[in-house]
Amino acid sequence: MAHDIEFLEEVYERMQQAGLVQSKVEFSTRMLGKGPSYLTSMSARDRKVPEEVVAHLHETIVGDMNDIEIKATELEEQLRRCKLEQAHCRSVLTRVAQDGCGAKTANGRKTGGRRLLTSLLDIVRGSLSVGVEC
Image 1 (cartoon, rainbow, N blue to C red):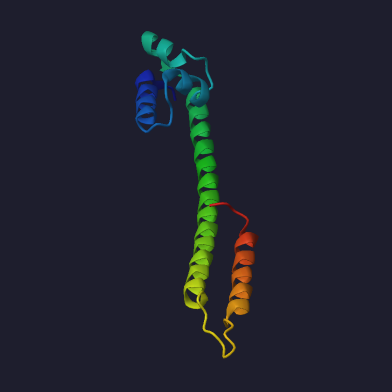
Image 2: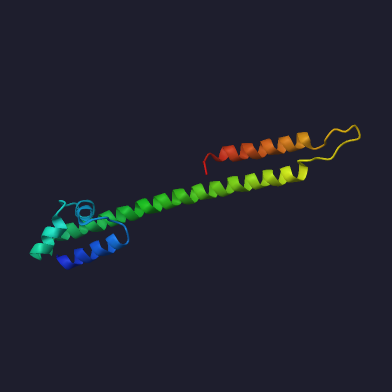
């Protein structure tokens, strides 16, 4: 079933308004798999759009959606790792605030310093094993 050119013009307008394409040239080449002036010339002649052009448009949109889903999943994983790193930093900050001054023993030495250092190193090691910069 061939579509009227108005169908493609409407699709182009919606995609352009959504920022998915920047121009008719991009729409014609990337989304339709045709030459740069395809949409303009088809509109000028008020032609019917062949089914294979609509099929290419469909396949391109599905491919774009799959790419977006993959990117969203990657970003969600990066966000999860950043939140974990943030939690480690908060833990370090809390530990520093609690033990930073440390109580003094009878001979005037601070307690908790070695324990604090060990805890901080454990937290930093955990953050480094996450492997993502935030």
